[in-house]
Length: 72
Image 1: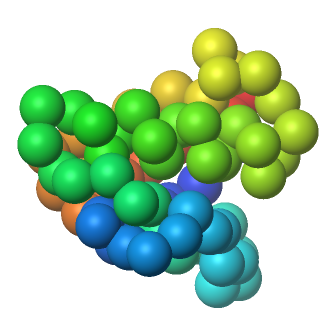
Image 2: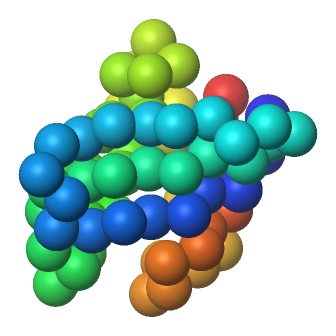
């Protein structure tokens, strides 16, 4: 399944908020430097969907706040 994710980096906690129709708001406590926030997004989404991290892949938007993510 492909979902659209809006990321808020440097948050106080890691959290996933469903917005409806395949859209999610993801708060991560990692900074948006050197891919650390992306790694944390994958980790948080894997936990939310109860999947291994290798099942969550960022398809588009690695350098932006809005991303398209595939969860298999």
